[in-house]
Length: 421
Ligand SMILES: [Zn+2]
Image (tube, rainbow, N blue to C red):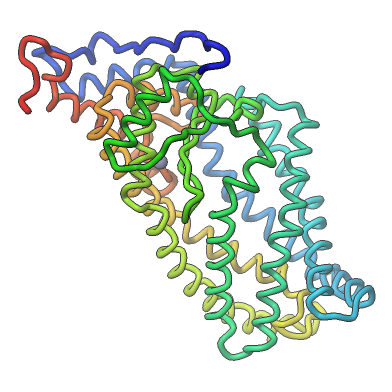
């Protein structure tokens, strides 16, 4: 049934010190896998990832400066005046303000986003796109923001104007509903705007994955692949969608660069997210965060408008011109919340790792994938770095978990002393 026969998959390479045998030791095996990265590769990956810690700060400061600029120069107020002059109806003029603001943020933020998203990626050898192709993707993102986020902004301002005393609670509810809708439609409508998704047809890869799915009670008959190499040579896979649009997608870099064992290891991890209901847990967590952040946002807005509202020409919280201030306050909250978000994500990722090891039974495949992920995620950070900045366990943590599993399952593949059943 396959249209063309793809080249044979790369073979699994196990370093000598990680081979099964009477002397197997999880720590030694972990070090052997970490040493597969050459010193030059390690230096590059560490520099790339550590630079990312600083970029979080620069992103925040740069974004804060843009917000303050829009407010203090009266630009925000003028954009609202323009939108009110063009259309009389409140919801439409709110949307028109949002469209102007989106474009202003895109243009003013462009120097940093181009450095971060394109030039820096290219400098570290992670970018496969031309600047023009990258720019087209960014413009699609802007168009999506103007339309989809625009609908949400219109709904939120309607709530603020209608329910002046309890808007923060209803705004949280509406935000969660929009988040849910975007997760549900993303694999079907949004992701295909940027990449081509096709059914995985190579039976040698697909059949073991479907067996793994069936053994876990996942009623999948299709696995998707995506031409992610269009943008980057990063290896990755994910579970996306919710309420019937769920799907598992492997990117073509993973398919081209990993052994069949590593692909199965990664698939076991992704199925873990699905079986352990990480999507629903994430939504529950985000509901709490939305309630908390909107409550704090309301206080922050009231406090700031009492001080500078007149000077900035903002009438009240129901005036769209207040948006740069709202964005600034939310960006402070998200920056402060980063370690919390990272820890919750990392806990789920670790759970999925353990699930994947137990179901796919491919510790060396998992370790191989972890070393490849080390191309863009520092493999061996300090515990404090991992705690603050990692939304996935570090390569070291993941490889050690795999080797610890392997140490207890030395009987796997052993014809003389097979595993007891
Ligand atoms: Zn994951």
